[in-house]
Length: 95
Image (cartoon, rainbow, N blue to C red; front, side, top):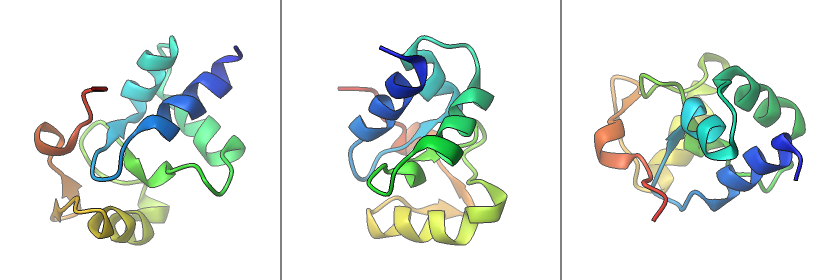
């Protein structure tokens, strides 16, 4: 399976109310490149991909999508404090 498709499959598997980082997505897909995960989500994801469940390594959303991303996460019960999601609380373990 192509790496980009594996990354999209990882993101599609994240349940509502949970998040991953770009690095998590990359690692689970067999890559060392969080930037590639970001590129794949920005350019190859379709409308059904839950892109909003992927955050930067410090728990913050993509700056240009912050309002929409945090609103979508809030609707799923993921709360942010000062624009940052607590990864210890909301990071998906894959189980």
